[in-house]
Length: 181
Ligand SMILES: Cc1cc2nc3c(=O)[nH]c(=O)nc-3n(C[C@H](O)[C@H](O)[C@H](O)COP(=O)(O)OP(=O)(O)OC[C@H]3O[C@@H](n4cnc5c(N)ncnc54)[C@H](O)[C@@H]3O)c2cc1C
Image (tube, rainbow, N blue to C red; front, side, top):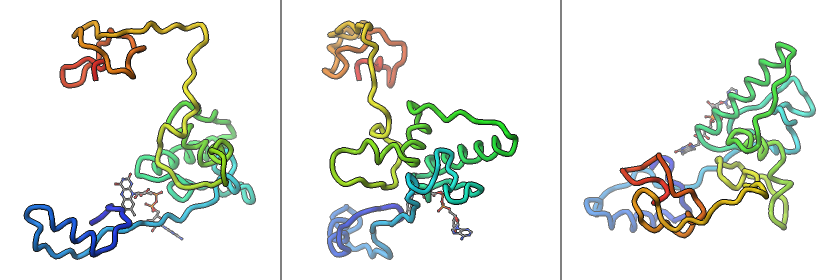
């Protein structure tokens, strides 16, 4: 079972899987487990452009820098490549904004995460991109968002977490304006 991460013991996994109709008598060639990532302590070892502080001619990319996932690894590879190309051309490349997925992930890898982690021991662990890596969303002080109770298009009451969202929306998913979802 490729990519099936679990701490369940093999016996327990087999018991659970055999409850699935059709798999009562299945033989499992390989069961789930946890995979371990080998990664650099990037916040300490790498600078903000993914260069090894001790040897700046070396640049790191991909999962070993402390991201996880196909897209994340490719994304960090892309930005490392762009930084390398900028170096080769003796130009500078502005970092991606921290409000973008790439900028937030780069911030996590090169040090932002360990500085802002909750109270407790500092740690650095590989991460997929997630909203916890982004800076808190800010609302301009003078911007008042009206409270809206129903969607203007469908007149349906909005879910509680959407009460301050504009009721007019042109985008829809499966025929429903997104405010209704
Ligand atoms: C079982 C499993 C399931 C996964 N499922 C998902 C999933 O569903 N979705 C997802 O987004 N991610 C998934 N991942 C994570 C994803 O595979 C990785 O995050 C991603 O492939 C990392 O890409 P990378 O190019 O940075 O590194 P890698 O893909 O690990 O590539 C590194 C390459 O460097 C080579 N290498 C190592 N040392 C040397 C050396 N000394 N000299 C030369 N070459 C070397 C390796 O052989 C390898 O080819 C999964 C990982 C595992 C293990």
